[in-house]
Image (cartoon, rainbow, N blue to C red; front, side, top):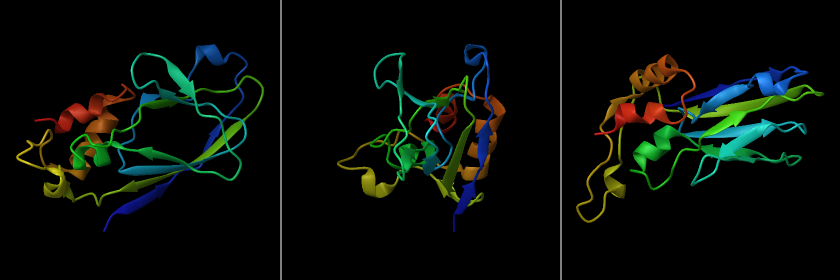
Length: 152
């Protein structure tokens, strides 16, 4: 059985948002993240090819669904985790509610045999989720660097 973690995050107004970040660039350590954001915005995803950032405008009543590192590993790169960050606002508070869908702490995961077709080699090793989780948080917000922990 896996776990769901619900965070309630408040980003206060920052008169000089260029001097700080709400949350630094990272990919989630979950399998899937569901995000409910308010109307302020501030979520940015990394451009697929390049170093730029794309604003994810809030849509009233909609959820943002992010693929996390666990799903990238289990799919052997068929699905890619999303590098993203949060920027604070100069004039308005921001509130977001992410729901992280995670394996159980003692779960062992890696590329599923069902996705390895025609002799395809796994790109990742089998890892214990709690080991991966702890490694992720030991690295801080360093983009998608944590996934290197599971690579063969």
